[in-house]
Image (cartoon, rainbow, N blue to C red; front, side):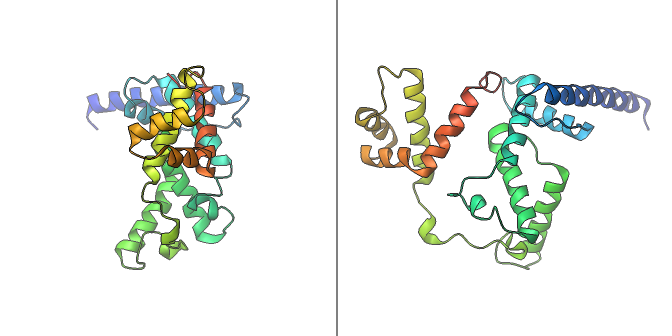
Length: 222
């Protein structure tokens, strides 16, 4: 190996070893996280999370990763497709676990673990080999019924987030009620009644609880 590249490799190994030890120490100090041993691969995921989020810090990336690990140990919402498959066994349960880890990327930019990526790769490979009509069918997934698909789902979730954020910033000026729903409805291009229904729905409750949990962690809000 080139001497310069070998020196970089040694420095990288040393940095990742130090970071993994720090993460292990951090998990043992946290009351909310189950203590465990962290590897260099775990440390590398923290670095990737740190690089993926603009103006982040390594500390915030580690906190986001620990937060994601905690969420993965909790049961998913029953109103989601992942929640509907929560109690299935066999290959599909392994795939659901991997899909949940991938979903966490949207929140923390925390890369799924190697066994999750292996499972996802197998699902894609089976679909590519025409072993199923869609990714995951060969492992036991079923198509989402059309009646469950809301074409304005993403818009409603954005409206829920706006209602929560505006009220959180100034609850006296913007109490939860018709006026706030009308305001957000005008911004989102939907009726106040639609915003209200979305806010008080099961999906809305799940979103509000998640926003509260994140906002109460000072490291995650930085």
